[in-house]
Amino acid sequence: MAVKTILGLEIHVELLTKTKMFCGCKNSFGDAPNTNVCDVCLGFPGALPRPNKKAVEYAIAAGYAMDCSITKRYKMDRKKYFYPDLVKGYQITQAEYPLCTDGYIEIETEAGKKKVRIERIHIEEDTGKAIHNENGDTLMDYNRSGVPLIEIVTRPDMETAEEARAFLQSLKARLEYLGISDVKMEEGSLRCDVNINVVDRGTDTRTKITEVKNLNSFRAVGRAIEAEEVRHREMLKTGELGRKETRRWDDASGQTIRMRTKEEGNDYRYSVEGDLPWANLPQSLLDEVKENLPEMPHVKKDRLMKEYGIGEYDADKLTLSKELADAYEELMKETKNGEVAANWMLGDVSRHINAMEIKISELPFTMKQLADLLQLLEDKTIHQNGAKKVLRSMFETGKEPKSLVDELGLAQITDTGALDKIVDEVLAANPDSITAIKNGKDRAIGFLVGQAMKASKGKGNPQTMRTLIEEKMKNL
Ligand SMILES: [Zn+2]
Image (cartoon, rainbow, N blue to C red; front, top):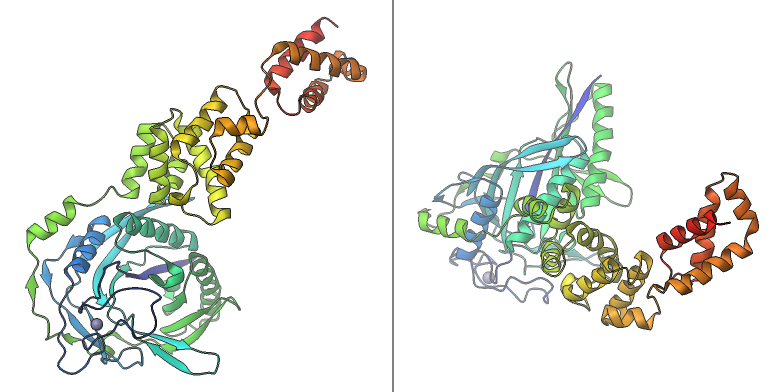
């Protein structure tokens, strides 16, 4: 039975505006509960919403960044339902005319390149937040009520957890480059729901779609997809196709748990938001947003490959984070070998940054200093391991690489007289190895190089040592 998984994503993104979507309250995470609220975002009778222009511009930018068409007709609707976090009894959203439609993001996985289509991106307001405390009480914080959101809905074009992850990574990078959201999944500014079912390709029998909520990390998204794939395949086997429902991901048990059978769209009784006038967005506004779009990660990736001669894999990794890509380009102003620079940025530099949990902007050294370190390596003043030690020390002290080479005594011995002496001593001490080499056992040379490196306290150059040993062997 050839079974295919069908995956679509719905992503809510909080926009990084100063104020909320329809009022002047501060849009800020982590403030004391219920301090950023007013009659509009608490839905008092008679309060009138006013749209936030910046939020509309950000949503348009997101649309352009994903190659969408932008609908000029600006209209908001009410999605009506009762929930304690929704004091108004309805959420202002865009049902009928989403601002952006028909875009795509191209992803790349082991299986190759693939376009994931974006069905729509629309604007809406966030709800309040329920906090369940240890006494079993539920407390409400309405600071988030009315925070501007965009909802991005994909077509069901993905088939594996790996594809979903690649899509989310690319989406997150684009939003980060645009600067329209801080895209922190752990703080809820990027939230992802998964729609999943499976189909038997032979008979076209399908299980009913499950929507999985409560996914607060890329890892949780991947695990939830894998768990649901197993559950749906099992359902298909037994012929029990399930029902359309919403489930919650439980990270501890690694399973999804049923929340409710899914409401049909018309359960929400959508209606026009009569307090906001219909409007036509002027072409000049659309053009202005488009002209001011920053270079997107996938475009930057192609440029880095061309400009600095690096491979696609490195370019992809570098451009996933704007900070990293910017730092790399700054480094390239000071150094020449693009590949070496990429290796260091993605290797040791990134590793220390992750271990220290700092941002690139918090590095204790400049890209010029990092370039100086690469130059010392290029000049053969130090070798690879020495450079790694200097870098570690740069992270700890922020000192100049040159002075660290002296301080740590890492400069390679370039004085051939000194190296000669070391090699002679090593040869004299290891007559057995010399016999072995003469009998054709080449591996013994490696042993002698190792001994010579040890004797030089790591300051010799292994290649020079090898050449010296080979030359001396000829006369033995
Ligand atoms: Zn307000």
